[in-house]
Length: 485
Image (cartoon, rainbow, N blue to C red; front, side, top):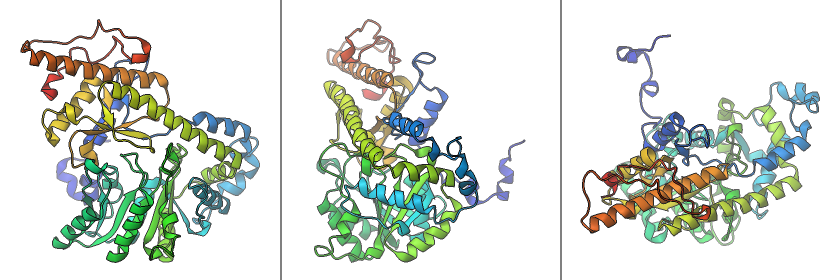
């Protein structure tokens, strides 16, 4: 089959020929670098290690154990095949009642059972991606906008904008207060939109935050509710990391805040939650997205639109059984939290030993790593230069802050919840080698002993296992000085 030449582009739509998907960004370029040269401990030990994908793979053993004990939950097993004819036929796009009931119960449980969810308000979608686009279609027309505090998940630029024509307007948050969103920043972004004659239809927040791994406290959530009520705009709360909180303080859902009607006046028609099982359960391949709205008209519209991206009835059937098992769910949530905390410590402590700090966080599947001290200049260009060294020389796919619309160059997101301790050890070895090389370069420059032909080799470095050093680093003879000095 031949490819269409540029002269035939007029035969296609603007969406087909445009770049609205946003693949031309460092965020996606890092994935491509990994896919073209993936790390393997024996087959390709010099390959790129994937640390740019927020997958929760730490509790797959618990899920596999449950499936082996409950084979009847799947209609594709001898034990479950008797339900095949009932489940495989056409289903109402409202979703299986047992599935919606189980999801509502699970959403309450991961929020400490401090709030209840109505199964009749649960709308299915093909993952959080589909859920966000659907809610955008329902709330805004092309050209209208949502405010989004920075840094925010790069996929939002695709999910909410590409096909809807909706705009995303950054609300600048800064490191001195740990990137916490403030009323002042919200007002500034809103007023800027008004001056440009852009109609703001809503505020989108992610709680817990991707990429920060922090949570919004109750007082901040109250301030956000007050803000959207005053402006008569919607509040979309992405809570897909609700069950990834691994230390204090506890997660507070927007659903808890609006239940406090005596303390805060709130128009519930303005409140909408996006949820999924991709992060909390580690099931991105199942494509289970959830829209939960307190607005009846939005629920009805989203349900109609959900017919374009339903969750398969087989998946619903399996998950309804799994999420209804209280013993399994309680164990999974507790063990997931424990393993995430350990993985967090396993990364942050070795990084701190080599002078790399991370934003203090207690949730999510990632670290917000501070490499500002390694930049040649405090500019986006210097960040990109450093990122290219990390991808090409260190062979780690981490995501630069610019992809997240971060206002301060030098921050990078590192995903840490993939399977495999060996990958973690190799990744930390490469980072340590990278930092040591940078220090050696700077020390030599200070001693004025630098010459342009210098090549640094770490083949002689051997440190014990706990220090994560290895002679097998792809950093040998790296042109690191180009980005660092």
